[in-house]
Each structure stands twice: as C-alpha cells, then as structure tokens.
Length: 323
Image 1 (cartoon, one colour):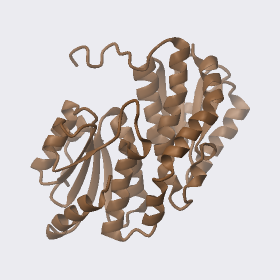
Image 2 (spheres, one colour; image 1 turned 45 degrees about the vertical axis):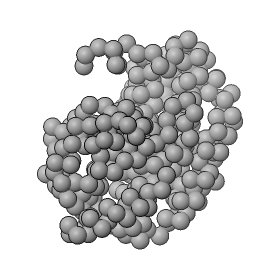
Image 3 (tube, rainbow, N blue to C red; image 1 turned 60 degrees about the vertical axis):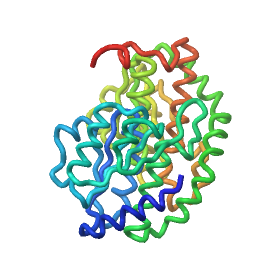
C-alpha cells in the first residue's frame, strides 16, 4: 500500500497549522504490539517529532493535553475494538489528524478515521502488508516527508524481502519449533525477554500468543530490566524465551544469553539474525525486527498448540461474555 499520498496530504494540512509536533500510536493488545515498531522508529530517528504509544482506553480516559491539529494519531484495530473506535473519535474531536489502521474497509475504524489503511490479515496474511509492516511504512514516510530521512530508500527496498524471509524462516526453524513444543508443552509459566525493537514482540508472544491463545501464564521482560530484579527467579526449572534482536540493543540480549547459559537450563533463543534479517540493509534492518519476528514467534507457539491439541482460536471469555 502506497503511503506517500496520504502523508503528502497530511503534511499540507499540518504545515498550515504550524508544523508537526508529535505522532501518537494508539491500540490495544496485539494491535498495539504491531504498531510498536513504528513508535520505536520515530523515537529513534526523528529529530524534531515527539512520539508516544498508548493503550486505547487509557488514551480515551487520560487524553494527552498536547493532542491538537499539529498531531498525527495512528490508531489500529483489526475488527474495530470499541475502545479503539472511541480513541479515534477522541483524537478527531481534539483536532488531531487520524489514520485508522484496520482489517477491512467497512469497519467502524475505517468509517471514523480521517484516513484509513487496510492491512492484510487472516490465514493467508501477506506479511509485507500486515499491520506491523504498514505502520512502520507510515513511520518511514513521515520521517521522509517531514525530515528528509536519508535511509528512506533502503527502508523501502526491504519490503520486497520480508515475505521470503518469513517463509524461509518457518521452513528452516520448523524442527526447532517442534522441539520447543515437545519440551515446553506442559509448562504453565513463561518469561519472554526482548529489547529495543523486539520488546513489543515479546509482549505479543507473552500476552497474545501464550496467555490469550494458549491459556499459559507469561511475563514480558525487557532484557535490560532482567538484571534489576527479575533474574533472581531464574533457576533450572523456569521456562524462558529470549527474542534476540538485530541492531543497537543486541548487546543487551547477548548479556541475557550469557547469563542463561550459566544459570538456566530450560530456555530457548529465537534470533532475528538467524532468521535472515541480515538480508535487509544494515542501516535499517533494526526496525524490521518485529515485522519478521512476530510471525516466527507465533509459529513456535502454534507448534505448541498442535502438541497440546489446543487451537489458537479457542477462547474462554473474549467475544463470549460481557467485559
């Protein structure tokens, strides 16, 4: 999907209002984790654009005072979660420019957003057109048009490689994923660690894939924060998953790996470098960690679902009871 005309039109509006001050990302659950890489990109690369990421309901109840016509809000929900639709309405009412990312052109998200981005989803999802990929593309386009981002061309060329990297990764990692499922299928508690661009992915694996889809207890830990309390729970029994990133925060993951090899026994490391992220230009590869890793870590949990005969679609409460 071409983001250039969307951001070009938005730029004209915002410049007439005094210039872009901030880009806010708003969503719940897996959608929030999917747009996390774009927030990380703006946070890392923008020179004069502030950014933050919000849970949709918190955005509604504790709306940032800075929200105005100099703000872009990128708000994401696959099927128009009510609180996320309300977040779009709140942002509109405050004068912000809203880009609604959603799974269908007919959702309430699409109907309420000033601009809409429909992303690939479902069983036949095209990963280069998924929510995490397109949110990231919006981020690159904003940097390019507002700040003449010098790595823009390298970033755009990466989109031609994403799908092959993921598909080859699944083929190459199937034995490891099946071994993981066999070894850890009866565990009830998992610690999932990640840093920098993969912290949001660690959240996805823990909260969406382990907790929501497999009813396993899981905790998300930042690789840097692991050594400031949580590592005291590490022993030979606890199950740990380390998602290793490519980029500036990789030394933080290396430090965790060194510790696990010394003091833990039941852990697995899923390394973005081994999946094939090095096929993307090194100047921007860091920002594509999650785009590649989310489908891969989900693939690992899917193998567990097969081993436990617990379909990823099963729910006890979601969409079934009042909440």
